[in-house]
Image 1: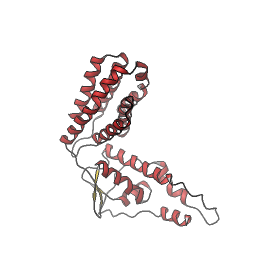
Image 2: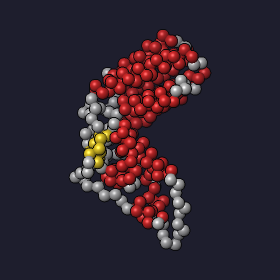
Image 3: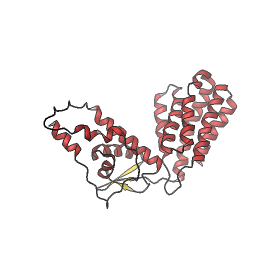
Image 4: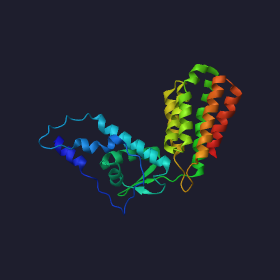
Amino acid sequence: MEQGRAREQARPPYASAASATTPASVRVPEQARGEQVRGEHTHSEPLPAPRPAVQRHSVRGQILDALRAALVDGQLVPGQVYSAPALGARFGVSATPVREAMQQLAIEGAVEVVPNRGFRVSQRGPRELAELAEVRALIEVPVMLRLARTVPPARWCALRPLAEATVAAAAVGDRASYAESDRAFHGAVLGLCGNEQLVMVADDLHRRAQWPLGNTPATRRADLLADAAEHTALLDALIAQDLTVVQSLVREHFNGAES
């Protein structure tokens, strides 16, 4: 049965070009690409040991990460419909992990299910982005200001590599890497409050705010650099325990997200 499943995984998914399109360039995780190759064997070779159940979830997680990166990069176009088999063929995996990842993105509001066709990337407007920024500010600003009064400078110094990672990603204009490092920095700052539920809610809102708007130019490298510079300036102010500057920078950071 294991051999039959391996052959089934190796069978390429079929997709109709008329019903769906695939992004021109999507980052494909190496593990996901090699999933089918590892499942192939000849009759003279011993059957591979059963894979642990977590491996399927690992592949699905990699596909989910790749789809999220494609959303941020604009490779998955707002309003466009994509089928799971077509994307699976692009990634070199079956349609199942793609479909499962897309279902998660539907829960997050990034895509919507189109019966018998696939998934349509959600079209968002400036109002939704402004609303997300407002909700994020209501959650994060008070927490950051409280942390600024209570967290010792040494704890803030430990976050320096995360702030520098946002600068490095912005410098090369890598929007997907910037989105990841940006969320990592904010998550680490909020994590100092010790409230895991707050961190999860804030991370979900942050992720939603990073998806591009429909029919608008991609985020410019200069904008990424300006945003990253606010991270390092904020960290400098937190280390110096300059509460006036911290308050100004935090509010400016979220006001900029609304524009």
